Amino acid sequence: MNSPIIELNWSALMILFNLVILYFILKRFFFEKIHNFMVARENAIKDAFESAANTNKAAMEKLETYNKQLAQIEGQGREIIQKAKTKADTQALDIISEANAKANNIVMQAEKEIARQQTKAISEMKKEVGSLALMAAEKIMEKNLEDKSDQDEIIDKILKEAGTSGWQN
Image 1 (tube, rainbow, N blue to C red):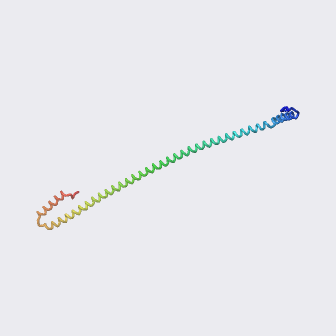
Image 2: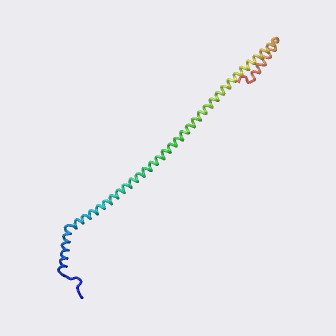
């Protein structure tokens, strides 16, 4: 049985002829449309990928910009806090120095008042001592009115003691 693998007969030729005609008809009407559809689809997919990449790139740029702004705002916040702290410290020092100045002023006024009161007390004491001395002198004088030499001696003695004592301070 030696039969050929492919037999050439009229039906095989017709099938081959039909296939060639079908191929040319498909090529003429359908292959170009399918090819154009595939190219358009490929371009649409490429555009979608490019658009996604561009959108992703723009989002990354915005994220970077926002991160920079956030860092800048944080820096400004730290700077504002530092300025406020410095200002508060300065105000505290001003308040303390003003309070010290007022306290020193009050102390000086109190010292002046004490000195004035002391001077007044000394003056009053001198007047009191002077009046007591006069009263003592009057009493002495009443007793010793008879003896004039004793009076002169007592007066000289009082004047000497008054000159050497601290009455005139």
